[in-house]
Image 1 (cartoon, one colour):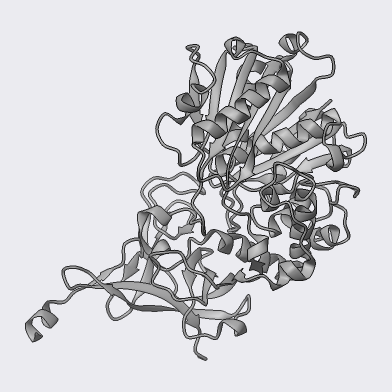
Image 2 (cartoon, one colour):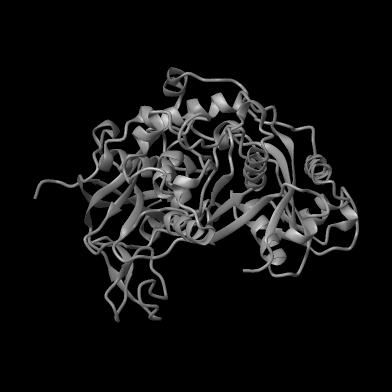
Length: 141
Length: 373
């Protein structure tokens, strides 16, 4: 069904605040008053209470703040154990709760450099690709 | 300072798996136990507070209604795993402020078997689809950080569970009354590294009840009151550049309680801390000031938190072994500390305990309470 295929859209998975397209990135907030960044986005700044934060694309590289290897899964998750749950610290000072991919869980170490990966999670009832994000070990520059 | 508050009576329905029992039945057993313990008739109770999380609309009236319909105001209180300690604090606030002389708290929960999902799980979005909301994972990530920064070993965390189960074996109200070896804990199924199955608190059915009175009112019932001396509740604070995921500012709250109670951590004879997962006790011995920052692992490993140690913690088995029916847990913590301060804790008794500290954390807030006799 080539016609359906051409109409197929990419949409972020609910709760994944993503810029899709050629240069995918997480969309967070930046406070125009004090410069603090947040992910997920918010309206009021937690640092200075300024209202009306700006949407901003966040760095796609960060480092591993902490992690665990999940050996059991809750019902409804797309992940198959074992998988790595991670807190990734971005240069903006933001921590992102996510999962790691393309890595042997046993080799994961706090402080390792990571990069954003955007991939298809599911297809919704209208045939759209629901896109999610993970992080993976950063490729050597 | 208002009226001093006395814990006049405590009661529990044994914690465990009770699929055949209703929430009302369990609450009734705990409530009647507390009334008898206090020597109080329900018709004299002026207000009720019910801590529960997932029992539905009207649980307060439904549970208090098991022991009487006297027209008193009853308020439902939800603070996840810290619901009934917060309910007790609200009752104490009202007594301290002179509004009531006699109030009662019921904490109750019936839980499904299996893993608990944390914040955000219900909304079915990114966090739940990607499997991030797994509750043990939250503690596991804090544990990994602690291991990274301070060299804490998995054995240190596991020892918490060994100690808890040894204490639970002395508690007829505990869900697990069987001692475990370090090997049992380390070799049980890994859930979220470094946390194994026996380092997770179970899901539990159970109920607790606490009767609180003004000092003046309490004199009608007892000559040796246990005081709920000082209490502080709080929520996480945003601090620029910090991104730890504590449920609240534990150290700040403890320091406020110590200051207002005129004590320091060295004066605490027995404590209850929130060990939903074994690393919890390691973090909290540091955050409550019982040992220096970063040294919680060795401190626990060396036996300092055993019943005969420097600061006995979770003498009733804690969440890990006594069980964790989330809405009832705070009341069970208060129950154990009250028994300890009265000298009624039987084989779990800490000799000469006069001052006690409770720390109970839930998603959405933390409670710290000091008790004295």
